Image 1 (cartoon, rainbow, N blue to C red):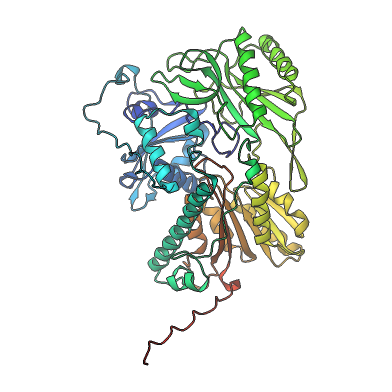
Image 2 (image 1 turned 90 degrees about the vertical axis):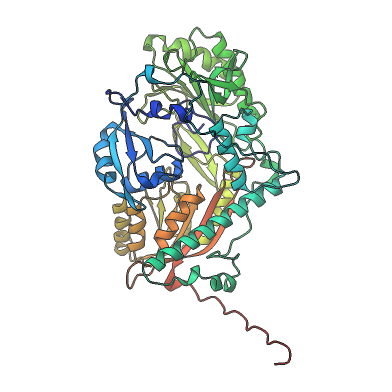
Amino acid sequence: QAGASGKDEAVEVEEPEAEAEEDGAAQAGASGKEEAVEDGCARLHLSSKDFTKCPEGKVQTWLAKTSGIGIQKCFKMKHWNYAFVTVRKEEIEAFTRAIAGTTFRSHPVDVKVGHKRDANQRRPKGEEDPNAKRRKVQKDWPEGYVPTLKDIRDKEKSHKGAGVDKTVKQKAAPLLEYDYATQLGMKETYVKSSVRAFTKQAKLKSEEHGSTVEWTEPEWALRTKAPGHCGCPLDPIIGTPAEHLEGYRNKCEFTIGHNAAGELEVGFVRKIQDDMQPLIDSAEDIPHVPAVMKRFASVVRDCVKASPFPVFDRRREAKSGVWRLVMCRLSANGSMMVMVQTASFSEEKREALTKPLVEALLAADLGVTSVFLQLNDAASDAAQPGAPLIHVHGEERLKMPLLGLTFEIGPLSFFQTNPITCALLYEKALSWLSPDSKALALDVCCGVGTIGLCMANRCRKVVGLELVPEAVESAKQNAALNGTSLVAAVLDPPRPGLHKDVLQALRDCAQLTRIVYISCNPDSLAEDVVKLTAASREGEDPFVPVRAVAVDMFPHTVHVEMVLLLERKSRVSEPPPLPPKPEADGK
């Protein structure tokens, strides 16, 4: 469950607000007269002919990049030519101004305010829609066949859409049945396909402008010893060390609810039932959850059982109760930070909930040093920005070591959830960036500053930036002011990638000579690489991909990270020519 704090990869596998296709219009609001505005957000109905057969994720990525506004939620079935999008209420005007009439591929996008559908108009769950097409459920593979990561992702999507029931172990660790070497091979191949994808896209883009980009040609792959049709070579995949393949997560969120037997459980969501109530199973068998966190979930379960406060009822017409979820973060030194999320209740009763919980956690000797209470009255357990957060016990920050440094983080801070492999990823990224002592380094999408601080002793100055194009211009001015001629940048964006204005600002910063792009979503990286590398104006010095590598931060899952080094074309050495072809015999 991604929760409310950044871009952590999901451990929990299903969100309570996700409904079946036949109820999609009801969920997002396609009829009625009451505006679909709640929890400070508004639902909008967007349509375009080219939305048809475009996956929900790609539409959401495009909307976020084009508007520059955070998309709270996007709901779309692949065959729809429309989507239901939720944005903050105060951002409706800006979002509509940016998107309405804008061309998606080759057709404009229409934006309308969504409305709630009357509950009486909904078809009862379980009643078959005579007009609905039967979903295709991908069958099992032949015996002995080793699927690709794409095969597995596609199968997971087809099962989810068809409501195939799976255990939380199967959902949270779909690759567990394969040995780790096979998992690494799957992920390395997936990243290789991403390199081929952006190579092909960049070639097509350049052809639109009547130009040729040398690194997209097959001969370039041969001369650089890159895989076929790849614009750059790939290093061997960086995997998680064998001794850390289990219990590697330093953060987990556990939903408080009931299992199939009706017993109270603190664990992961197995599925969302017809009445929108999540079915919860224990996390005891999940391999990447540390043993101490499993004990933590057990202690909380016993505490909730003894509590006079009821569990939050997530059924569509209920939305009552208190206990919702708990989150724990674990430092390498054994210290644990805890955040419990509840619905709002009177301040006078707060101690009656928090005091027994804190006492139980301390008595269990889990290493708990900090406890927070988050109040959330939204329909989803993913709390909205600004949800009340109350410190109730111990330290306010948790110290997390990384590459010889110590970072202090709060309950909502983003911090990589696999610190061991994260250190290997950062070492690779910084070795590729290789800033000298006179260089200015940019940490774009810096968050709490982990990458920037790790490279601070390798360069003259580090400037941390968030997604603001003007900040890149300021960095350029800082470089000139300090007599710095070369600028290097590390980009570590969220899953949708970088906003188009930030990408353009990076291209236009002539002093920026080298970029290391760290991506948790190779698909969005491919789109960004095309914008950074395609030659679209006369006299430009675009970037060229130089090296790529896959990183497995999340063993047993379908997630894979990718690191890509790009340099200005003018600074990339010409690869050696191909050896002459041997002459045929007798000539």
